[in-house]
Structures are given as structure tokens and as C-alpha cells.
Amino acid sequence: MARGAARAADTAHGAAGSAADMTRRARTAPGGAFPGRPPARDAGPAAGSGRSDAPRAPLHGAGVQGHATPPRGARITLEKALPVASGIGGGSADAAATLRALCRLWRMDLPETVLATAALALGADLPVCLLGRSARMSGIGEVLTPAPGLPEVHVVLANPGVGVSTGAVFRGLSGFGEGLEPLPALADAAALAAWLARQRNDLEPPARALCPPIAETLDALAAAPGALLARMSGSGATCFALFAGAEAAARAAAALSAARPGWWVRAAPVTS
Image 1 (cartoon, rainbow, N blue to C red):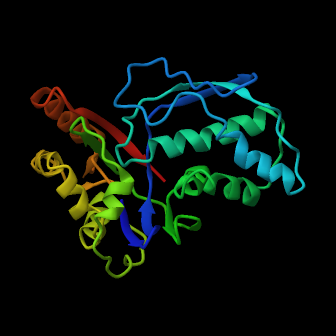
Image 2 (cartoon, rainbow, N blue to C red; image 1 turned 60 degrees about the vertical axis):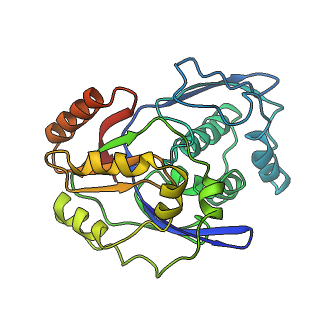
């Protein structure tokens, strides 16, 4: 759930972020390089190569600032359950988990502020993934304000089987509006949906222009029995619908999967 703004070559956004409870695992072991090896079936085109020194670079920078310098490398095995380039922060969550795992592996007891700075070097939404709870994001994502605890709410995520370039979406952004309303304490899922209905995602119009299947995805989610709200997530193409209960979400996900077998569809509780 995001609103976006782009000025010249820079990007900035404010967002209310929360996490769906979906399993992913990143295992680390000592080694001389960083070969990421996803063992599961790929959910989309991979971005970049599977071998990178990116995780070490920001941690090395932390070492330069007076903290322990990390060893040369590690071997990382990632079990990824989310599509790539799908606007739900899966890669950022993976990177945040990897940073914590590497700190544990290398026995680097870094202050949270230093770790957050290292995370920001890898991506604007990594700090909120490190935080691990619902928060309001501002600046480019590095300014975090913890949000009130969320009520019980369940989500159905649907991706029409396409990836959308975040950079391309931001380049298509013609402007941005006012900030989001303050997030109040919310009594139930219906109150959360009502608050979200008054907000907007500035990235949705350019994402729709780049990826017409987003409109079909939103329509399908909104038509599901029990859906309280349907919106696009982040820069797309994944969309979501909110439900008050787990059973309604599970039924909607099963029906949508059966009707559109080429889509990636999952139901999950939202954690705060």
C-alpha cells in the first residue's frame, strides 16, 4: 500500500506498510562468494544474476564506521515463495532477512541504526522490512513511524503472471498529491478498509498504463464475495483484497485460482 512521488531522477514516497504472513527462508553458511540458489520453481523472471557481493558491501561500510568488518563471503540458499518484480516487497524482505542472517553468521552485533543505514544502501523499503512490523514510511522509506496495532484482517494477493519495472512506473508518474491521512486506531477490518478507501496509490495510473492486466486483477478481487476493498500493491502488478476472516479469504483465493490458473494467488493473515 503506497503512494509515490518522483522528482527528476530521485524517488520519494510515503506509505502505510504491513506484512502478510507468508513463508520465506534464507539460509546462510560460510563461503567465499555470494551464490544465491533458489531451489523452488521460479515465479517470474529473475532480476540480475544469482551471484553478487551486494550483501557484503553495506555491512563492510558499517565495519569502516568502527564496527567489525565482515568476512569475505557466505553461501546463501533462498527459498522464495513470492513472485519477483511484483510490487509486494518480496525481494526487499529477502534482503533484510539476509542481512540479519549474515550478522548472526559473522557474529556482528551491529546497532539497529547502523543496520538500517546498511539496509537503505540496498533499497528504500529495506528499513521497514528490518523493522518487522506495520509502520508509516516517509522520506524515501528511511523515516519510519510505528503504526497502531492492526485489527484481525486477512488478505488475498493476486498477480496476473507479469512483472512490472518499478523504475518504469516512477518514470511514468506525472505528479503526486497530498500525503496520506493519519492512521488512527482501527477497531476491525471494515474500519481499516474504510480508511484505505480514502487513500490512494499514486503509482497505480502509470502501472495500469504499463500493465493492462492490473485492471482485470483488481476487478476480479473486488468481485470476490466478502471482499472489503481491492487495491494495487506498491508499483504493481500484484493486487490485494482485504477480508474480515480467514475462511472468506481462503474461499476467495481458491475460487480465483480455479478461474485463472495462470495467476499467482495466495491468502494470508496480515500481521502487525
